[in-house]
Every structure is written in C-alpha cells, then in structure tokens.
Image (cartoon, rainbow, N blue to C red):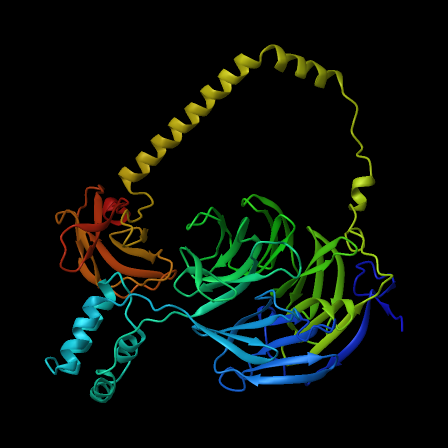
Length: 589
C-alpha cells in the first residue's frame, strides 16, 4: 500500500509517503478542536479509544462521542458547548480505568466507564454590594425600572467589581421589557458565575504514565485552579492578568510543576509552585492560536503566520514563517524512538511537521484541519487523527520504516553563495589612502565632526528662517493638523490670490474654520477679506480664490497676512505672510 507523494519535497522530487491512509470519512459530522480530543484506554483492555467533545451546530447537538476503530462506540448528550476534554486517572483502584473530564460552562462533567460520575461547579464570584442594594430597593418597589437602569449604568462605569449577568442583561433590554424582567428576577438572589476557558492535567506525585493526576482549569476571570482528583476540592489557586485561552502543564503537584498559559491579552505567562502570581511573562507581537511544549521549550503559533520557539524562562530561540494562518497545533511524540515534533494545521489544507524551526514533513489534506491528535489508537502507537472544517474524520498511521530527517524539506543555501566574488586587486592609490587614514584618523574624525556640526547649524538656521517667514506654513496644533500655501498670479494692478488648504489628519475631518486677511488699505483693496472654509476632508486639496487690487502708483509692494481661525476663537490656528509683487501696470503709468 505504498504510494508516492510530492507534498513533502519543495524541489519536486518523488518521495515515498511516510503515512498510511487508514480511514477517511468526509461526512462524520465531527466539529471540534484539539482541546476537545483525547485518546484513552477507557475499558482497560489495552486498546485506546478516541474521545471527542463534539460542538455540534454551536446551539444544539453537543455530544460526547467515543470511537473505536472506524466506528462510533457510544455518544452522550452535553448540556453546553465543551471547551476542553482530558483523560486522567483519579484513583488507584483496580482495574485502572481512566475517567473523562469535560469542561462546559462553569461545570466539569466527570465520566467513568462512559457513565456520569461527578459534576464539579466553579465557586461563585464576589457580588458588588452596591448592586445588591440597588436590586433590594427594586425588590421593595422603592425605585422604578428606569431609575434602576440609571443606577446600574453608573455602577457599570465606575465599580471595581463587575456587574452580574442579570444586571448586564437588564441593561440590554428595551424600556417596555424592563418591568416584566424586574418582576421575574427581583426575588432571586444575585450571583456572579465565571466559566471555564481551558483545562489540563497535572500528575499528583509521580511522573509515571499511569499515575494519579489532578485537573488544572483556567477561568474567564483570570484564575487557575488545581483540583484534587478524588474529592474534587480546590488544592491551589493562582491568578493571571488576563483570561487564559491555551494551557500546557508539566511536572508533579507535590514536587514541582510549571503551567504555561497563553492569555487573551496576547501574552504567555508561566506559573510555578509556591507562586500565586506568574513567574515569567512572554510578550508576543500577535495573539497566540496554538501552544505546545517540546521538552524544556515552548512552541507558539501566532496569528501573523509565524511559529516561535521560547525557553521555559521566556527567552526567544527561533522564528519560522508559515505560508498560511495557523488553525490548530499538537505534539507528535514517539517515546520508543525518542522523537518529538510539532504538528501545525494550516488554512491552506496542509499539516506541517516542525522539529525546532526545521520543516521535516508536509501532509496534504482534502479540507482545512481544525483539530489534531497523535498517539496510540487501538493497538497502533503512531496514529494521527484529524478532523476537518467540514466535519470529516481523517486517520493516518505512521509507517514503521518512516525516518524523519531535519534536511528532508529544509532548503539549502542559494547557488549565489558558491560563486566567488571577483574582487579587484589593491592598487597603489588604495594602499596609500588606507595608510593616510590610519596615520591621520584623529584629525580626520575631528574634521568630520566639525563639518557635521556646521551642517546641523545651517539646517537649524534655515528652519528658523522658514518658520519666521512662513514660507511653508503648517499648523503647530496636534488637534487641528492643517497645511496651507499661497500662489499670486498676475502683473497688476489686479492680482489673483489662491490659497491651497489641506487637512493632514489621518481620518478626522476639520470644520467651522474661517480665513481673514490683514493688509494696508492704502496700498491694496480686496473683494472679500473674510470668508468661511467648507468642511475639510483628510488628504484633499481645497483651493480658495480671491482678487487683490493695487491702489498705489509708486511701484511699491507690501505683505498681506493670512489668518486661519476657528469660529468663535480669537487665537489663529495658522498664519502666513504673502509677499505681493510690484504692480507693473501702475508703475509704467
């Protein structure tokens, strides 16, 4: 069943594929993400099953599905959208069958032997006391719904503790719906409940594969909880500056552990034992969409089509640029071979395999991959399971003869590097010049600095002269960025004066402006000495014309001053001086 595949070779050479196509069902109706997929030996028979938290349509048909081989073994209905799923051992009882924990809303549903076993609820958050007082007044009919809305809006803008869901829903209602909402909810106590955003698993006291594990959950309000695997009580609580979205956990709770969390503010925080606050922080240039740990390093996929490698202390190691946006990421690990790689699903229907920053293999898929899981499925160790955007299920098996080399897909140096440059021989003039520079280095440096200082002085004087004479006037105000230049046309005694005004702001228009002229009335007369400016759209040039008559027959000229003013303000926003030419017509007479 070997076939040839060009997808992993950039030079177009035929390579034998490293994967066997075990199963493909384009209509499996599986809509999920990598955080909601796990491989687990649910019955202790040595065969791993595929456990999937299916999102359905996003409103209904949310189910917990279990696959065995290529067929659906069982499915259970979920009450809300699943945000994460893990398989963990919660006790030492025989037989050693793992449990399934599904995070959904503010709850964790624990299944054992594919049956509901326990339901954990997140602790309630603190309620704003002022909000409670306002609803108590509404309960006793001391305030009407309109007043209640005004008071809640004031609390929402100023209070340190956020409002409850009830108050936020009330503020969204139309006026005619408020009274019925108050009558329906005023007797019920106010509660603030957060939801689970991500879930992980932490070994309790041993690093063995079959050791008892604790659950680690991240919540919308920025808290991270570690739960006891048997009593499901909170063992430890840590806080983050933002809501966590992705999580990776390593270590043991009783010894030492690290929790790497990607948050909604675009940063990655690293939590350690005996530290309720983050120990290290990694600031990214774009938001993370995938997080995988490889040994002691962390690999992060970002929205700007990049893949970054960091140490566990936040030091950046490398960056790889991707041909398309990242849709999902997962770890590929083969303990028997000592091999680790990162699987990256891309929006161009490809799955890339990276070892550090080296691309070592590429898999073509019929649709965009939304979730990836690699591990033991059934009795096969190297099984790659993927779900697609259209709801399809893809199962591939790694060949036992497959060998991954870092140079499989890595491009070599360009051909130009092997061509020697034609460097000319050193002439006597070149040698004499280098000797002169070596002997007079200090004097040459001083002369260069002196010339540079003179150049800077000349530039500063020219700038000051331009400002004083307003040769290129521009507004000094940051709130009203304007630019204006003047053009005088004609030989006299009549001149046409054109003012070109431009709004240099990025996107904000300027309005309510006026132009005023100041001139010697014994020398000149103007048809319009004051007029309003229309709305100035950013980037466009607005020409404004007026005519000037010269009254003198002595062949002299003067300056006409232009002021751009805001209506109702006396201080000008922009000024310019226009040097009028000599009137040739009157001078000849």
